[in-house]
Image 1 (cartoon, one colour):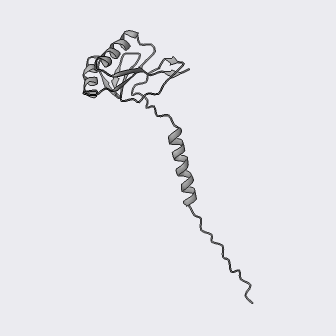
Image 2 (cartoon, helix red, strand yellow; image 1 turned 135 degrees about the horizontal axis):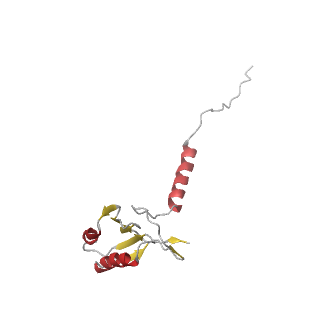
Image 3 (cartoon, one colour; image 1 turned 45 degrees about the vertical axis):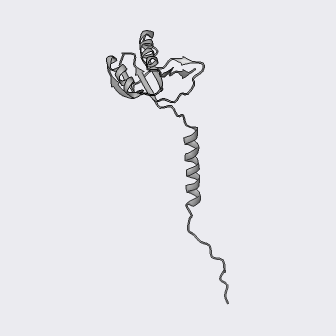
Length: 129
């Protein structure tokens, strides 16, 4: 008497559907994450009602104790013009200023003037309310 079933149950687990789900979750989180890269120095940004996201080609950071950084590289105040000139040579770029809210405005105007003199678009990084 053959009472055995003709349909055998396979006990192997297929990981292909699990990897598809993980891949889709990875793509979802990559697309919904923020594309803003933090600046190299810890800066307490001022607040603003509208905070547009700009592509950061060149970033200039100034901390409250007046430490300067250009693209995460710490430089002195005198070296900023040379760094910006070499980074923006021959092209019109975007310079994003990450200036601490306790820094006097004269330093913001000085760096903005250097960047504008090199025909770069200047924007100030802020955090939303």
